[in-house]
Structures are given as C-alpha cells and as structure tokens.
Length: 385
Image 1 (tube, rainbow, N blue to C red):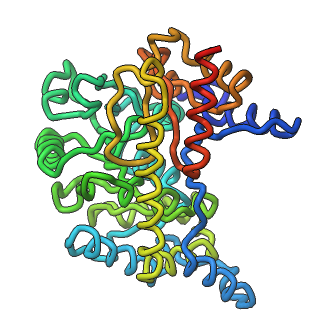
Image 2: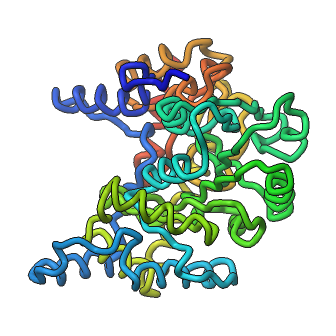
Image 3: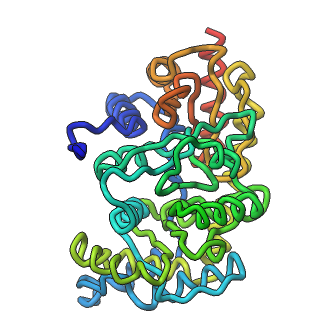
C-alpha cells in the first residue's frame, strides 16, 4: 500500500486562517480571533514559577528518561484520583511531546499500514492526515446535530466493516458534545469485545459545563487514553501531553519514544509537574473554565439566529459549531468574507467534515469576554450590511 507523502497532505485550514489573520494585523487591522483553539489565559502561576526557579539549574536543561520524569508520571497518576476517583499505576503513564505525538506513537504501536481506523465526523482534522501519512485507512462515521453530534454504540454496530481502531474525543472538537459515563462505557466495552482498539482523546477534560467528562480509564483493558497540558492547563506552547496505556504497550512505546524524541523537553516537564501538583493551579484554572462558560453564553445570546442555525449548545471544550447554511453553502468563502469584511477570524467547517462542513463554521470562545461581545457585534453588523 502506498503511504502518503507530506506532499499529499491537505492543509490544516485553521492554521491558514491564523496566517491570513496575522498578515492583516501586520497591516494595522484589528482582528477578533475566534479561529484557533488556544486558551488566551496564561499557564498556572506554579508552572511559571517552576520554570523561573529551574533556569539556573543545569540539570533542568538535560535529557530525562524517555517515558518522562518519574515525579511527573506519579503526579499525572494522582490527577486520575483527583478528577475521577480512580487509581492509576504511574508505570502506565507515558509523557509525550503534546497529544499530537501521543496519537502518532499509539498508532505506530498498535496498527499496521492498511488497517482501518474509524473517526466520528465532524472531528479534529489532524487525525485524518496523520492516518494517511502512516498508511492507515479512514472510516468516517457521520454524527449530526439531530443526535447532538454524539457517537453511540449503534453507529458502530451499523458499520458495514469492522474497523481495527476508533479514535473518539469527548468533549469533541469542533462541536463541544460530551459523552455521558454510560455512553462511553457502552462504546468502550463494545470496542474491546469486538477487537477494536479504542483511543480516547481526553484533551478537553477539565473544560466541561454540565459536570465532569468521564474517562475511559478502567472501562476497557485495551483502551488508550491521550491527554495534554495544552487546553485545561493553558500550556499550548510547552508541547507536553501524556498517554495512559495497557501494561503490554509500555515497553514498545518506551522504545518508540527513545528513537523518535529521546525525551520530552525537560523544562516543559518541570512546568507540567508544578501545574498538576499544586492546588493553586486548579483554583486558577477552574476560573478559566467559568470564563469559557460565560463566553459561550455571550456568543449564543448575541450572534444572529440565522448565523447560528440548527446548532447545539456545547457541553465542553471551547467551541461553537454554527450551522451557517441559511447564509452560505461555502464555509471557506464565508470565513474569508468574515475575516476580510468583518475582521473576525473563524474556521470553516470543511476543516472538520469533508462531507457537510461547507455548511458550518467553528467559533472558538477561548478568548476574553470583551472579545466575544466585539466579535458578535461585528458579525451582526456584517450580516446587516
């Protein structure tokens, strides 16, 4: 089977929007940023302090073990008790360079070229491109607004072919839909019994508005958890994440890590350790979640109904997936007009859904409340013009 080269990859459109917005800002044009899923909040204070304190220490600039610093793996394991009341052996924790490398390592460890991986659609576009580069087949499972964008076990049972794996995010990007504990358990059990390797993307855990999101940990002995310090912990640029894996995958993943990266940047691990260990961090970060909730409500209350269309109020993450079919059947063109005419950067739904994404736009509400009011006003004014 021919494995895709980098020349075959489709663009990650949100990054193109960021580039175009940056070019306009360089010309002195004020842009409201609703395109990128990046918190506009700082890392927690303990993380910043830990970096400053570590800088004079030469040991903080050297390699660590490939699976991550022991103290950080233990602290991540303790997070599962804090958030989910679940005990986790730190030996199952693998520290990675962001969740992005975590997905790549999981796919390399568990699948062979030609294997089929199912993806809910709409979904995070980098999954699709990573699968193509690794020579894996994509099997899309459409989820739509009339089922609240949620994948359920009936979707899996209805598939005409059994996939080798499933990547499932909850809360989901771009819709913010969040599975219940019962829904996730049903999917996890089905996948394990059917021999479908479940990779659970939990990078938006901590950012939920209707109660905590459930983890797949302990629901299936074969499932892999992928998480990150980028979203809830507001540490995107530190490029640090983690996996929780079955015991039999620890050794192959260690060998992969040794060869792919040697080790995760030490200063990032030091910052992550402080972020996940200190109660002060969680107090600070939970205020950010309340801010995201307020931002969501500002957009819902102030954007025109014709722009929102048949949308579903997001239960987690910091995205609103608007149904824009009433005003455009070309989301790429619509987002260009919003950027150049309304000076609001948004992401076309085609980035997340190659089938019906031309009828939708994703808005990120990770910025300030002032930004949400201003962006809503600009979109409203543009639609009236």
